Length: 89
Image (cartoon, rainbow, N blue to C red; front, side, top):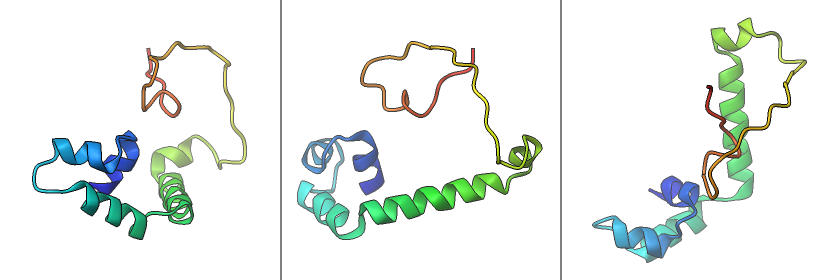
């Protein structure tokens, strides 16, 4: 639940209004005790390394070069995924 609250940027007390059985204090306490920028960066590193080990990732190359076509794609305002994911189309 803490990852959901952090990921949606909803905040613990707003989230608690929509999640039965949990209080804003519980969500806030858990986030403050178990969430930090250092831990977030470690999780990102673990995820990227795991992705790089996938067969499909290795078929794209060894990861030493990247390419982009510079295509501008409009995204919705305040879209949680707009910074990290652009739909194929």
